[in-house]
Image (cartoon, rainbow, N blue to C red):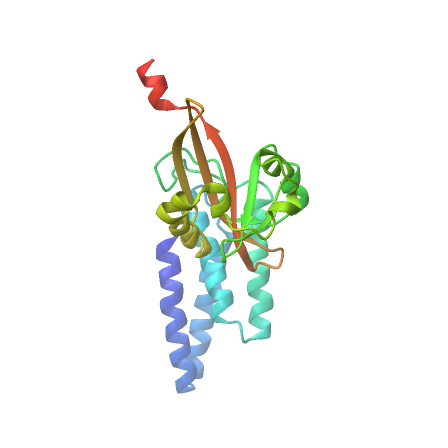
Length: 230
């Protein structure tokens, strides 16, 4: 996949040069080659998370590159929509690799659908690039003895803690805002019991494919250290 994408951008650069030179024969050749490469990149149904990410990033990069051409925007939006329908609609394939080497359990890209998120049995935040909460589901709000609207607009550090935010979460969220999945896990002592919390982060897009922030799935995990000692 990476080789195909690299070749596409190489030929794309050559096409721009041919256009600048007004080299019609070269333009025609490169146009055909680029169409074939585009089809090869976007039509392949890959089986690994890394290649899915490469396909999405390629489609988004192409959409941004040709943002001033209405015809290209329509075509590239359709390409991105096809990828969303293929992977997110049917469930993304996972290869078991995450940023910390553990089993993958979350999608690298998520389209914001509040109705769907409301139905999840897991705790969910959606955090904007300004680190403020712009959505949470009822299960998560209940953990703070609050209503969902009480959490919206507040800084995520209020809920994870300033220390955790400054030490790790902010950096991981910044990476997420750039299109990378991330994960942060920590343990803390609560009333004499060790609680392990995991924050699984994915880039979150609006239905029109604009980045709205990061979706965070909050989980409480078994304390492996305690289990190992036992």
